[in-house]
Length: 453
Ligand code: PMP
Image (tube, rainbow, N blue to C red; front, side, top):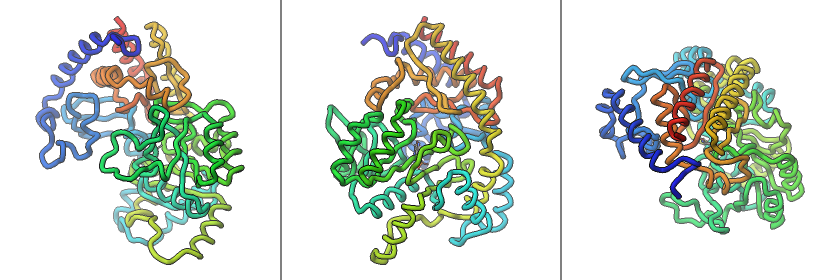
C-alpha cells in the first residue's frame, strides 16, 4: 500500500529525512559520544534496546528531575516516557532520594530483614488487599516466581497467556498465535524448546477460547494484565474480567494479574479500582521509584496451599529467589514510595492532566481527518494510528505502524517532548506540568499536520 495509517509513505520518508537532520544538528556532543556506538559495548550500547529508539542515535542523558530530562547538549525535554513506568511518579522523587541517602550509610544488602521491611509488609497488605507478599528485583522475576507457585500448588504443567502479551523476559510466556497456530514467538533468540508444551495462547477478550482451553484441566494459571498495555492498548470488553474470574474458578485455574503498567489506574492499581480478585498479583518497575524492585502477593488460599506443598516437597533449591532481592535499599525506597509518593493526591493530578492530554490528542486527530484513536488507563495515554477500539493482540499487531510511529516520535523529540519508544505510550506523572502537556499536544499537532499535508 502507498499509505500507512492514512499517511503517504513518501511523505513519511520526506518528513523523516528532515527531522533526522534537525535532530543530529542539535546534538553534536551526543553524536560525538555515541553516534558511532560507545566503545566497550556490544552493538555500541549498554542495553541493546537503547539502539532501537527512533532517533538516528540516542542522546546521552546529563540528568533528569521531576518530568524533565536534559541531555549533554543542554537540550531539555518534557519526559512522558518516564523510564517506561520505572519513573512513573517523576524522576528522583524527593522522599525516595532522601530514603536512599539515609539507607546508603547503613548497608546496601545483607540478606536479613530490616525495620523498613516490616513496615513495607504491612503497607502492601493494606494497599493491595492480599495477605502475603514476597520481594523480587524485576517484574520479570516476580512473574516467574508467581507462576512457579501456581504450577506447584495446582500440580498442573501449563499456563495460559493472551496473544500479544508481554510480562517481561519470562520464557514460558513467549508464545503467539500465527496463522491460527500456537508457536514460539518470532524473534526469540537461542530458544530450542517448544514453549507451547508449557503454555496455551488465546486472544484477549475471547472468553469462549479461554474456557475451551481451561476445560482440558492442565492449566495452572492464567497470567494477564488487566488491560493489554504491551499491544497498543487493548481494553477489556465489559464483563470480560468477571467472566475470566468465573471460568478460572470453575476449572481450578489460578489468576495472576500483572499490574506493572496498569498501576497507572490508581493507588491500588486496576485491581483495586475495578474490584478484580486475583490469586496472584505482580507489580514491578515503579514500586521503588526507579530502584530495581518488584513485589508479588498471593491470597490466603494460595499461601496455605503453598505452605503444604513446601512442607511436602523434597528439600533443595526451589528455583525462586535472587541474592539482591529484599535488600534494605529496596525497602527504604518502597516505603518512601508507598507512604509519600504513590498517594491518592498524586493520582488525582495524574488523572486530571492525562485526561487533558487524551482530549488534546484526540482533537488533533479529528482536526486532521485521521481514522486514529486515543486510549487511556488513568495516567497512561496511548495514541494508535488506526481505528479503535482494538479487541485483541492480533488487531493490535495490525494497528501497529512502526515506520509512521517512528517519525512521529522523532518529530516530538525535536519539539521538546519524549514519549516511550516501541509503542506510543505517554505517562503523566504527579510532577508533570500543564505546560508540558500543552507542549506535547502542540508538538503532536505540528508533526501530524505536516505528515497529513
Ligand atoms: N510486566 C509487564 C506488564 C511489563 O510491561 C513489563 C516490562 N515492560 C514487565 C512485566 C517486565 O518488567 P521488567 O523488565 O522490569 O522485568
